Image (cartoon, rainbow, N blue to C red):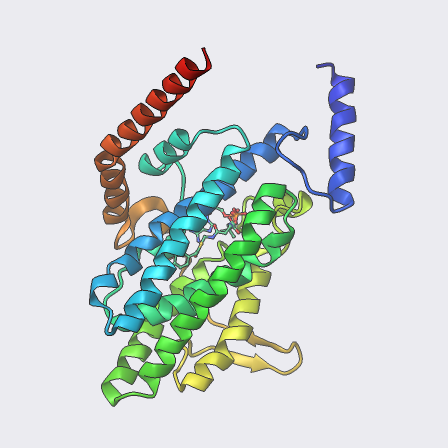
Length: 318
Ligand code: FAQ
């Protein structure tokens, strides 16, 4: 393709973005746009899949049948989100095998939050309330992202996340209205999950490598800091209703700005976790690798079955 032809295509692409039209898989797109979407969408898909592990840990220990059914449904939803997102990512010309390979070799990231352990039942409440709460705030703007398959996947994902957030908050509410010991469990879970939840939104805008370009392409519709502030403003009053204390001595409402001011995030901890040195990084990746290896016979059987069926169809057509 000549330089002039590429320039014309770039112009059409930029104009579509400016008009808030969706870019679809068969449309021409700059290579960097394609690559950065593969990076973000696959990281998102991996997060959903790895994110099943901390909660899966509690399915057999849920305190009642009702809690067990809800948790089971939530974890299954997360598998579904991962699968939609892998499919959306594949439309950009990368195979599922390559995506898994990137996760298993550590080339692709997944959300830092899933490298923390779930120590008590209250952690399941805290994850639903805080982690799904943060995920909704991050993902609602992504329903308007510029790449069609990603935006469409986000609509259903967000609806399901809102059920997840409510089931988590309801667990917290029940614990907080329970015995003194149960309330302490809820406070302890909040103490451990608060700061990692704030880190989910990524580094500050100043430190973020991709935000500027991703905002121009309308892949991201809000910056990391904007989303983090929105999460804090929304969540602090919810903690007040629970009668829990946010573990941040510097947290205070600023009447002039209408926002909460908050303390310093431990960015060293964040980068340590992102680089693979968190409490559960090794355990999470090895669980995923084992699942892949142990599932080989199922994949082989599915391929053999599909081949047999297509041979049969060809024979019948002859
Ligand atoms: N963890 O330049 P930025 C969920 C990396 S789904 C690990 O700001 P960007 C559902 C980033 O990749 C949760 N790494 O990056 C659920 C980049 O490194 P790279 C996942 C992180 O992409 C709930 C570098 O730092 N959600 O929770 C993190 O513009 C409950 C520089 O950062 C999504 O993925 C992090 N937290 O902004 C499941 C949503 N933050 O790639 C189970 C879609 C940053 O150059 C249970 N993604 N990094 O090597 C996004 O909105 C964006 O990708 C951000 C990061 C905001 C996460």
